[in-house]
Image 1 (tube, rainbow, N blue to C red):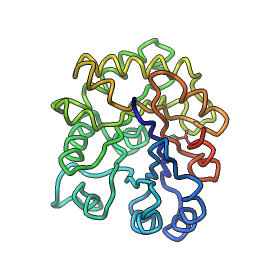
Image 2 (cartoon, rainbow, N blue to C red; image 1 turned 180 degrees about the vertical axis):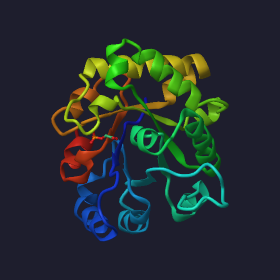
Image 3 (tube, helix red, strand yellow; image 1 turned 60 degrees about the vertical axis):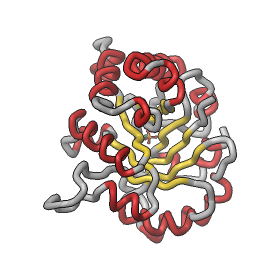
Image 4 (cartoon, rainbow, N blue to C red; image 1 turned 90 degrees about the vertical axis):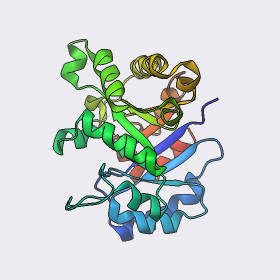
Length: 247
Ligand code: PGA
């Protein structure tokens, strides 16, 4: 039985002070015995959020990292830096990073491997544009993203990876995929994971849905057979996140 994982993705929101205040307000209510709860936050918020959430049972994640350990990469942060701070998760290959910051399947793959080597749990994102959905290539596209992102990753390591299916047309638009649409793609992801790693490993791996998840649609989405929780953007910045965790 896979444990659901419900992760907030704050994106570029909340200053360190706002982050600490929000965590203080929400931590007891957002903790869960049933689901794994994670706050993925901007780099500068990591320290106050880690401090505030210590002992709460809520995990902390970054929203990106570099694939090298150190070196001349101005403005970047490594997996080792995150790990040493006490960060446990990292979002990799979010569509906003692919769209605005030149992230590719190749860099995502390097980052996934580095995160695993450092002992971080990668939350690896994939998902199609509206044009791709309308052209009928969603499944092929997402299968390819998953294959490329996990290229060279062993089954033992892959078992730790969380895959987040986020249709780009549903992100921040208030336009959620129907639970059937989300299940169809999450099932296809499980199938490609089965082809790559075998049934046992694929059945252990968590596949999340993300894209306008809110307190009203979470229960229906998370009830689908291959949806093991969500990656939540806008609604994770508010108290609404509590209702999503306890869907
Ligand atoms: P959203 O964002 O919930 O605001 O649509 C989801 C995401 O980008 O992870």
